[in-house]
Image (cartoon, rainbow, N blue to C red; front, side, top):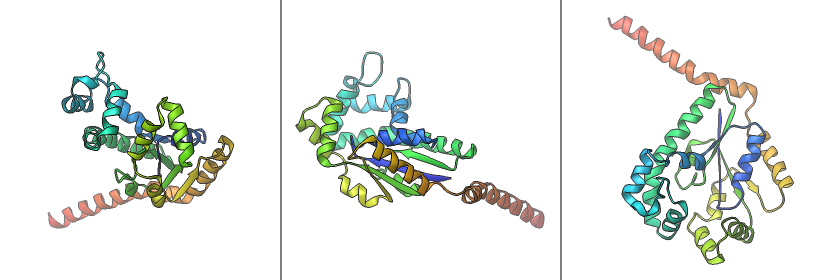
Length: 228
């Protein structure tokens, strides 16, 4: 099974690419969606966040006040690291679980949609890294429009992330989202065609783990007979 890491910058269009991939029938594991689920009331990550950030970042119903917490972590890199330590282990465990289930179902290709793919060093565990980018000006305009924020706040949030140039250096495939949806969709289709493994490759990769395990079990049983 081919694991593809999808990442980008804030408001560069990664989510749109993720939707287009799902439209193509490609399984997508959404780290942002998982991150929202693992901080729901009663979850361990929710408790850790309350312990480190206090009651002021929570709503009366126990859910996190996302705008308030977002302001804190964008302004303080140390707070951002603490939040990541509270959530990332649980996000990763759920991603591994979902990837394994897709493998059991026989998926030939799975996309890991992870905003911090490179920053969290998850890129080393995927076969292909895809980076979605757009021009700096367009990124700024999209972010201001999406979050209804000032230019100063938008620039601060963009600068709080890894520079797009550094992400592009790590990319195996680059998708330019500076034009329109039609052009973007064409790029996504080309990417899928390039990355998707052949049926033979998929079969070998799918069968290799159980074959290896079977051989190891057989060898262990044979050795036990020789010893005992």
